[in-house]
Image 1 (cartoon, chains in turn purple, yellow, cyan, blue):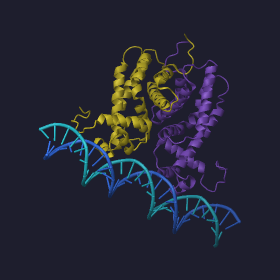
Image 2 (cartoon, protein in one colour):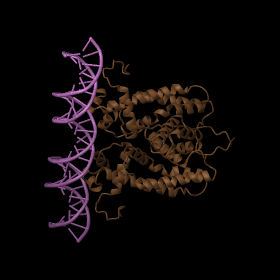
Image 3 (cartoon, helix red, strand yellow):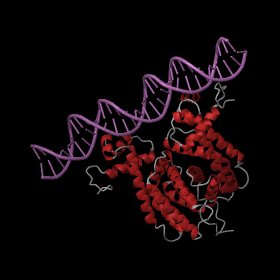
Image 4 (tube, chains in turn green, red, blue, orange):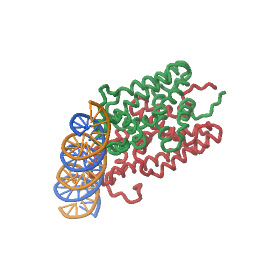
Length: 191
Length: 191
DNA sequence: CCCGTATGAGACATCAATGTCTCATACGGG
DNA sequence: CCCGTATGAGACATTGATGTCTCATACGGG
């Protein structure tokens, strides 16, 4: 039943530990292994039995986030229909992962080690969506798909942070991000 | 001549050290005091004679960034003229600080200690700009000034990061940020 | 009831970064 | 030339997090 392929020998659920770790690190990115263990309701020794070290834990979280993000891309059916609506759906589907994503986003900027290949797959799929939007004449051509992708990530991250700090209501997050990304701040003159 | 008010007793320029530190930390946010000293061309001891510790150094960089940002706000005359054009001018004026700002942006998210009061002053001025834009009917009313401010910060940060990683050309940074923030990704239907 | 297994508590060594200190030296003005 | 001052090099203690290890215990199935 384990994600890794080998049978799970531990009684406490590895997934529940990951979930608690994600929740804590989302709130406090610098939490120590000690704090993470306490938050997960287990001892530090047990935490180490699940994850070889902090790096391994973060990499597991990365893997989790990537899987969820890819699932969100599937769920949003980004290859179908109006690209703008597809972007909206994607943001809605991604919203549950926004906090974790935000944590990993800054984490990845801090350490310039080799990055997980999964991010490249995600980037490619998101870029494809924006490129399709350009080809169908829905998105402007003077903003590159690469930049639109980075901008989406940045808006999700700062949006999650704004929610975390109480400057934006959680229920408004997806609307704020998608409206700004798609429509911009300027009042629409047409219609 | 010192920013702090007391006479400068050191021979090497404190400002030049700050400048080098900013350049390095912009590239590598986790640089140690040792690396910073080497980058500045001085010994670690001398670095400590200038700044009591890493915290003090980062706080000095924070102060520097705040001053430059406020100077950019002045320079852009954000209180005058078309709000959209004012936002454009602000982004252009802020661009030279984008890298440093990006570093401090993630730095501040990591440590939840008391923040420098200066950021609040900046936030207030930027929010005022967006609010003025709403009152003058130029900006949409369904995106709060607080969110537009966070979004501006986030786009500047991710833009600076995209430039740093070579995904966006440095000369395109201000256009990418201002076009997306003001116009959004969608193709303008009017005109 | 017995035993295997996971766990908790904690001791212990390690490691990297930091902050402090000393001392010799180079430099520049008087 | 002499001296004060800033500097560089490096030793040293400290600190916080990490990783490893041991041992006692609780739990659950056979």
